[in-house]
Amino acid sequence: MSEFINGLLVAADAPAWLANHRDAGSARWRDSQKPTRKTEAWKYTSLHLLERDFAAPGPVEPGTDALPDFGGLKLVFVDGQLQGDLSALALPEGVQLVQFADADAAQAEQIAARLGSVVDADKHLFANLNDANLSDGLFLQVAANVRLESPLHLVYQTSEREPAFTVNQRLLVVLGEHAEANVIEHFLGASPAAFTNGITELVLGAGSRLRHRRLQVESGGAMHIGGVHAELGRDSHLDSFHLALGSELKRVDIVVNHAGPGAHCDLNGIYLLRGSEHVDYHTCIEHAVPHCTTDEVFRGIMGDSSSAVFNGRIHIHPDAQKTRAELSNKNLLTSTDAEINTKPELEIYADDVQCAHGATVAQLDEGMLHYLRTRGVDRAEAEVMLSYGFINELVDALENEAMRDYLHPLLAERLTRDTRLTRHLV
Image 1 (cartoon, rainbow, N blue to C red):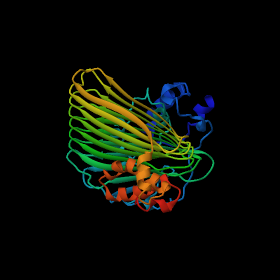
Image 2 (tube, rainbow, N blue to C red):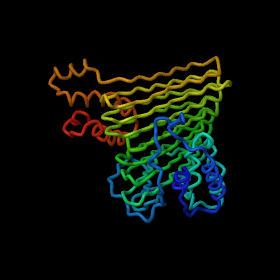
Image 3 (cartoon, one colour):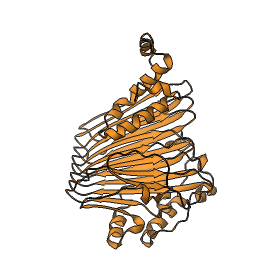
Image 4 (cartoon, helix red, strand yellow):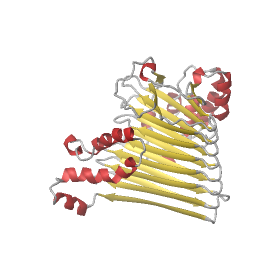
């Protein structure tokens, strides 16, 4: 186990003001009990791929992948390093965007005051590792009553090279009262040598609105353990969408804390797997105050011998009267060898609430397949059409047309290896 501990601690230069934060994270990481398959939260996800030594990435070449244009501002990171020639950025007044390493004294003080404030380090082991390896990050602050209308597109790309290396991604978003922003996190790469450990913190002030999109389209041998932690102030609104393509190791923890009355959260997600890929989503919605609402919908499609985990928890605290919270997880198995372990949970300690949760696991409907085949559609194409229809509702609900245009062919290709079968889907 010491090899597992030490192999993931990667020394890197960091601003002096981060030293205490890094030291505390390192101490928590070394003292923590590392998960095994007997640990309930990691029962179905093995970490054996991380039992080796990792290095910090060296100098990189600019990314070569064609990047979509979602119609807004863009920052591109390759192996954790900002690529200025691939980035386009122009910020309106009242919006502050700075890398931790470039922060002045005032900005460093603001970052230090918020960093880690919404993450429960005792419950999220890899948040401690992120703290321990923290050398840089990105800080977005939108002042009160300011709107960042154009989406901020953050691209995190990993390159294919050896030896094994780790990328420590960190994003801190702070919205002032009645501020608005649109943030897209976009992860790319298929290197079996790259391990991404990412933490995103979202702090929403009273009456603020944040549209958050997290697209994890790494594939193949990619390894990614990520966390999104949000705190919602009074009457704030978080609209969050998550997409994950399967890979060798992919785990995402999503925690939303309703900290102010009247807050609302829309949390939607899709995961698609094939081959022997794996995805693990753990979500936790904490309703600690009254008059808050949550709508959560996740859908997954598993093919071949892939495996997925979905654990969704809604926790209603004693003071959270007048809460309305709903959770739905639907899964489609397109192979008899595919596997899903789903566990929706409701923990309620208040008596005046409206809550519902449910999970389904199904295979393709033979009746629908027969209907399509009687109308001249061959079986393979009919299976793709029905699979795509299972998730298309969540994709079409995205407000960004350019994002929909990017996702439609990407998801269609994941459902079939025969490109001829995607013609009715894009």
